[in-house]
Image 1 (cartoon, rainbow, N blue to C red):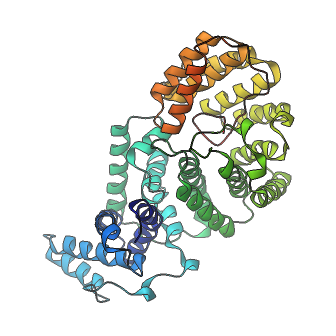
Image 2: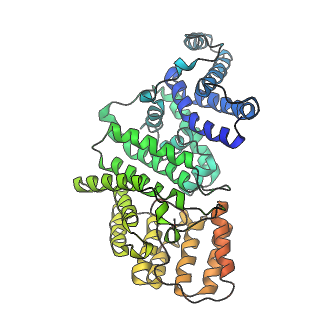
Image 3: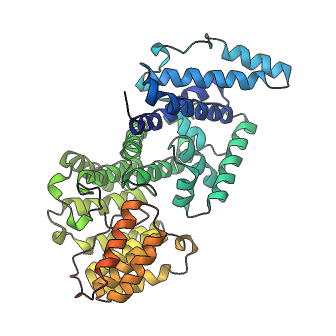
Length: 436
């Protein structure tokens, strides 16, 4: 018998695949998503006590399909009802489908589902939101957090996107090769955000959601296989591999956060690092450069340093300067400020950090104050650092991060000497506390 946590993990892994299968078969995205949500709820209720069925993917499809049939039968338009029910009854819908209906891995519908969510009929913002919900399995609150907008705003955006998909009559199929490039930017952004949520969860008791990070890497491998010559796809895959390689060293035995500078680098996954370094080396040589390639290059500098104090911070500063010219972002500016502080001192870092103070996107986020606290601590201003740590802790929704920030504030209750300039480290893949 599996625990509730194990069942939840399994359902998160299966949800986008089940939705992809139903959407392919029935071409009704909004109704299919509703049906899958009901199937997931039924499984979450029954599987922890009754046990996981032998073929969980098929079980979920069977329950969701029956939900679709019930919805179709309730439609008022007789012709539409009869046509849709006939299609749903093409195979016996009264029984749970067997394992032979489980599509083989090489025909993964999840990738097609991702491209569907990124259809140009939707606005770029709606594409991202819908894909994160349907493919990434993120909650509306988590998506709103990633976009730095209120949850109600994001809920409306997702609802409108579903309505647009339904009204447009879009077919569930992989777009022709000529059209894929137009959707690739959003596809990569979705995978990037799903990985970020898995690498450091925005809320909850655990620092990481490894199933999300693993799924993002798996799907990025699929996209890379589809377009192996695309430098940004290779760059994103390299970024994920290099960053995820630190997974085992990021928490202590009690689950508390371990900063990049303090991690046991012997625990890092050297095979993943070697693969990531090889990927980014090949793609940087081809050009032109994009933001994922540059972020992977920053991660590579960290990965190549045998010890934290041997990190080439000057190279990281140069890479951030180039990154901000290519893809301006307040998140990159804040991480850049950390790198500047490591090279030119905390005062220079704080000066650059001040340029983000007026950005409303960071106003409700703990990220800015957490970095400010770190730089103030480096400068020896214990009182100001303590205040910033406390403010960051109040804004943090991840329990491990909140506890870390609270512990830092508590340690600064008694004035301490300024920290050495090699204490902080920036992780370019997260939009929260950069010391990973």
